[in-house]
Image (cartoon, rainbow, N blue to C red; front, side, top):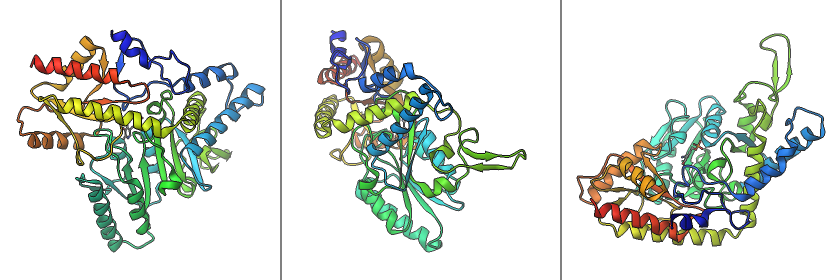
Length: 419
Ligand code: PMP
């Protein structure tokens, strides 16, 4: 039956957004890495015979590879709603993209972020970055940012650059942040805003122009493409003025004999030195196109129905406590973190894997400050002193079926019965 359960996530049908999977394995860990979509696999298979050097050769293979790489940049840019003055830079992942942006900030830039961010959006920023408290609601986040920027502007002239860096959806709770409202506040104070869309982009359209966001970072491996490709897209001026993220071939206009005699190029190539990840870029672009062609409202409604079913099932288990920052009904993508009272989360995860063939994540989810705080809050909200020190996270996406969710709920019911 486990094989039959997983069949919904294998590529029996041939739709571009069907995901690849292994029969018998139930993947409820999309937030860590989503399975690869058929569109990505097909695009890679089609290009493989044409494997050739990108930007570094004159042969037909090389020309086609270069064209495919630059077309992928355009497609990914379209998917992210880039404007005429934006660059689309291919990176390894979101972490890489945010580190690139951190290195591209003009001297003296003040960075403002929230304490609930993923480590990738907490740790790259320069010393002195302002870390606002985790807000209890989206409206509090907006007010808190407004107050912080007013304070920063009082002490600094208009000329001091400010960057606000926020997530689109939390990797711990799945809660969706009020990105457009935060962008409005940031711009009111002459600040720029960067969006960590690692978790939002796989679930909802992310459009730079529509949200009026200055920068966005995404990871291919969470967007149904393979590992090793990510994107930083956004305003070109800081990026063109910054030192190259990587120094090396492809980022230069001219190099003289003296060590300091280098003229760097502008544009995306400035930050992409070295032979790029052509297959990753092509795969990501193929998924972006497939998502654009799909009925995203229908995908959203389907996912929300599964999520509601999962959360209702978890709420019905007396030993299970959900982690959340905002009110229970606040909008979320398909991510739920929870604990089983009295049970070590790593042991529960291992049991789910071994006895039930369910893959999910345990730990503090690379958001230690937030996860610890939410565990403490869950203990007090539920009046329980026996919650473990780490949590479990189930996350869903394109290949998830209702039966997968039921399988997890049945496993947890058995496990908590045995408690
Ligand atoms: N931000 C968020 C919100 C994430 O969930 C993740 C991945 N867990 C990252 C950033 C980092 O992504 P990557 O590991 O692909 O660099």
